[in-house]
Image (cartoon, rainbow, N blue to C red):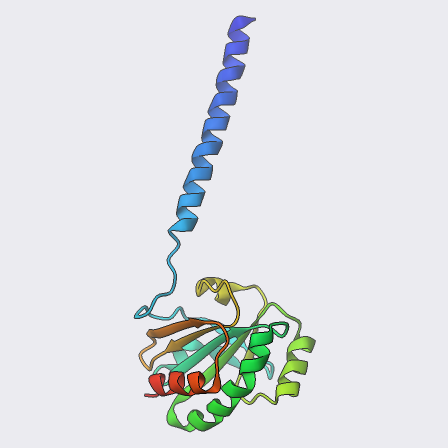
Length: 174
């Protein structure tokens, strides 16, 4: 009887020990997750815009890319979209492209937003949060400036003013 209790206790302790080791390992692995940093090559992705056109980031090599993550429910996103659209219209013929990525919302909500703000640049939905995860975006709005070589020049989280958008586009103009 005592031997049986000892074996059961030993098995329970081994299981608990394994659980603790696994928890420590997974927390350590998550903490060491690499963020996309300045001078890193921007992770490539393919998303389809609201008109059905596919956009692959690597297809924009040779151009500057203003990559903006946002949501229709986000007040700072609503405020900065007209600024991004205005500056896009100024810089699109100078080699600067805007790729706008909505996070996990319905096509109806995104299309209403596009119509309301009369957006001219490609708007895509990251329905599975794959691109958001690849870029380690945890707060919206988030903007990555990517140069003509596909390198991240700047990462900015928070609301942009029109002056900031203009300066950022100047920075990535080829």
